[in-house]
Image (tube, rainbow, N blue to C red):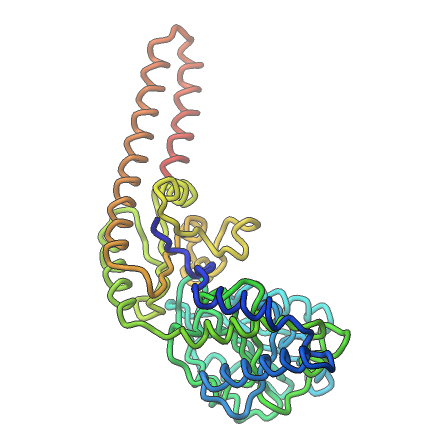
Length: 408
């Protein structure tokens, strides 16, 4: 098996799973309970917070556990915007954010907020000057992701933070899901950021919102007041501990750069392939489009050979067959409707990349000749059967259309 869909989810680390099982069975007490087992569970939670803050070298932030980056994004964006609506109703994000961010802003628009959606440049990056010009006196929140989950473009988050520092009312939120453990980034000046455990070899349903001390917001989830009232509901100590463990095991790998560059260069040589990712983006993601064959057919063909890649983002692939990110960056709907994404982790090898390229080329060639053979067989059949000329012409034209569709 060759697994190249790590941007969708990663295989849990054995150490992480073992630690989860140990805490889940031995320290299962409710961290809010006022007895020994509860105190023990709460101590593990606080220790996990310390580990996470130490990893990021942060001293002026707090850690809040939640189920995912999606939940963390909702808590941060809605919670802050609704809390300070009296200060201003203007919000800023980009057109290529993750759905968990974009849908928050769409909902806030229905609550009376005005949202400016910044457009990326040809490399999928929101230029700092574009952000600077969009800021207004009534702006209260900016949310821009660190690394795009579909094409891997890297935004200059530290430059954004410097610009926003001149606007006391404005807070910067960053979806760092595809950045944590993959690129080095200074988060000390970021007001709020989120990430998910399952993207860094942790477990699904574990996530974190990290926020500067002193920031207030309305809780999106009301209840027992856990996590300082920001996210009510019993906290899973085992999930928190396993996420902290996964984070400590995560670090950028130089070997990924070699895999990325080799794949990028070889894909650029293949006829009918257009690369959508910027060459200077995250080494962990390469997005490209097939201009002659359906992406879904390629994904299925590779899957039958136990090579796993993705077509558009896993977060919306079942609902929307087109990549709004690629469409926004390239302006080409044909490319956007036929995207493929390879995403690495630190265990992938050059041999796997070469095997993927070999199978991709074979599959493209097989598909091409299968379609040609089908086409000529149909034409030959129609010419041999005894039917009227007009009807023959009609069927030839119909099958020609089908032929062109399959070619695309």
